[in-house]
Length: 392
Image (cartoon, rainbow, N blue to C red; front, side, top):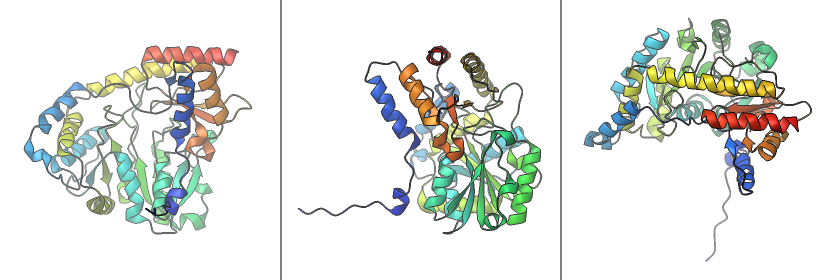
């Protein structure tokens, strides 16, 4: 029997190699040699989802009404819980009926935004280094990613004044992410006000990825973009329960903000997906509505891990400042080494996986990222190995 010739679409052919695929292959190779590998690469929380959230899911899953198709935009009760949480946390009120939409994880909403608002040939302003989905989703929609370098001398904030006017005039979306992955940087009101002025001047939609607003330390409380005056006229914000409540596998989040932007995203979702499982939405209501003690406790665990690893890295000769938020450390490479060389060196000499900075974009070259998502004992072992590897 003859076989058809299968050829991927150009959008698939143009994809960069998946960041963690090569790392996983090298990791498997080292493990095959009998090495006990400690993975500080992927940012997936190691702690379990809090018990009260799991219990809410168990109860909700028994109800037959939750076994049918859910609402495309999410249960009103979930959207109500999201807006009430947002009001308590950031002091800004939104209409649950028109200004919030449920997401199958914030990644889904971020990936669908360009489909709603970007035409072929439009520019989308994306941070570099940054979450790869911003640029990939833009390409899938036929748009052109225009990378905004995040540099240490600018606090890892994009220099909006450096964007050429001819690019800004053709831009439809501007993606931001603070607290930031991978750099751990944070943004203040002064920066967000400048973003709002830029967006209004060039008629650009601001998409703020706020996945890490609840992961902060030492009394710092990250801002929502939407609590800054003028933001709701130009933007939408993506929130995820994944990192806040250790729910990465549950796939639940929400987008909130300008009702026209929420409606556009909702229209894409209506035609592409069938909404989040209602039992998970009910569990998410429990997460958002209950006492946030579990979040504070998790932040304290991450703070201890942060301080431990910063101590080891300082001992190893690195110079870095402890981040105020996220569970990431963004570290300059040893002199004369590329990001790929650093990640290979740590894996081969220490049995420790770190993420090369250039995997997040060209401007990430010169750095590597560590995720604090392993238990303290394993993190302590990893730190000792790193110090030893660099002492040889």
